[in-house]
Amino acid sequence: QSVLTQPPSVSAAPGQKVTISCSGSSSNIGSKYVSWYQQLPGTAPKLLIYEDSKRPSGIPDRLSGSKSGTSASLGITGLQTGDEADYFCGTWDTSLRAFVFGTGTKVTVL
Amino acid sequence: QLHLQESGPGLVKPSETLSLTCTVSGGSISSISHYWAWIRQPPGRGVEWIGSVYYNGDTYYKPSLKDKVSISVDTSRDQFYLKVISVSAPDTAVYYCARFRAFSDYSDMWGQGILVTVSS
Image 1 (spheres, each protein chain N blue to C red):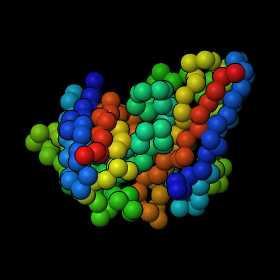
Image 2: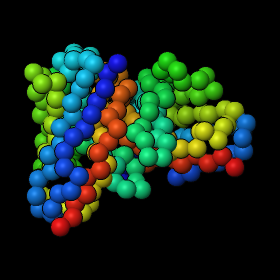
Image 3: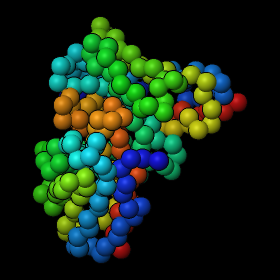
């Protein structure tokens, strides 16, 4: 029963683009920074995007983050087989006084 | 290079207490720019933030878990800890420790995780 809702899965062919949405509320996405994480099978999550749209060193620019109101999105262009993974959004919730993760989205490369 | 390592038992009996340690190396836990968190992931499911601790001992917990968990820190050892009381099967998960950037609230470093199974 996460407060951040993501689609369970998205898919596209190699080279195409996918967009993953993360829907929240005014007490979380609407007022705090959003971060995005990638989790490959059997490994710990890895930071992809922080402060809504910034990429850490080493993350390619074919990954992008954006936010509008109480929703955020992660875009992946030039899809590769290595992008097959689970993706989570996360942010602080001022009402819960806790960090919250999204429900997670599995990306499949067709 | 900062490194986080979880340690503790991989098997805990129902109704007992789960205790885990996260050791921070390659950097100091006494950073005013960061706080330290525990996150868990039941098999085949999403990640769940359990709670966090600042170097001065200030803590935050997921509301639904606050009566069941406690997190503490020992800056002299560069370690922080998780205790989960009265465990049951739903507490079976991979437990991760992680570093979060204060004010911006994102995690830039995770441990490898430790699988804890609750079973008799």
